[in-house]
Amino acid sequence: MSLEASVTTLLLIRHGQTADGPAPRCHGWTDLPLSEEGARQVKRLAQYLRAWRVDALYASDLIRSRHTAEILAAGRNVRPVIRPELREINFGDLEGCLVDELPARFPATVAAWRANPATCRFPNGETFQEVKRRVLPTVESLVARHAGQTAALALHSGVNRVILGWALGLPDEHLVRLEQDHGCLNVIAFGPPYPRLRLHNFLPGFLPGAACLASGRVE
Image (cartoon, rainbow, N blue to C red; front, side, top):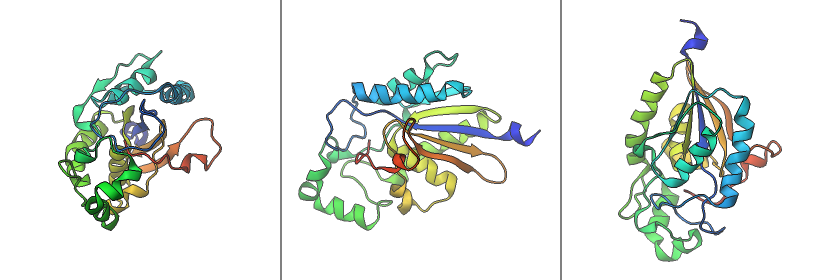
């Protein structure tokens, strides 16, 4: 088998902006659709990817992920495969809360997050460790299944960070340093001797460096 035939390329994509207004909120399992701007963001990415081969397309069961995948699938001979285990982290009691309100409403959780985001548990929600345990077995199986192919995953910022951190061998406490803007593209090549990050948080139509601007949301 040639080296190229053994490489799996993952196009790791974050969904577009959601229809809940511009203020940053915690949206994990809250099921919100894309806004008009969010759909435009994904359409820009779909246009950019027109020349790219995509052999398979996956999404979580949340509507913002599914809608993103449906836009990306338009004009292609692929249909999104829904994998519920790839949904965003569960923020529990923080679901729907404005980020600016968190220090006053959940001071203990904010303190735990700032001390170590890898081990912080959201009240009645999840930790990053639990997200890793449900997400990574599926991603590993997809990498193996699509050897020599390109698979697109239309997912969420927290899930994308987990996948990127795993591929790069990053400590869990550093995952929050990986920016994931709405409608962004990451490209990871899985092949010997190790995975390689070829593109990170890329936004079509923006100058190099502009894609590093934080959106302020975790969805």
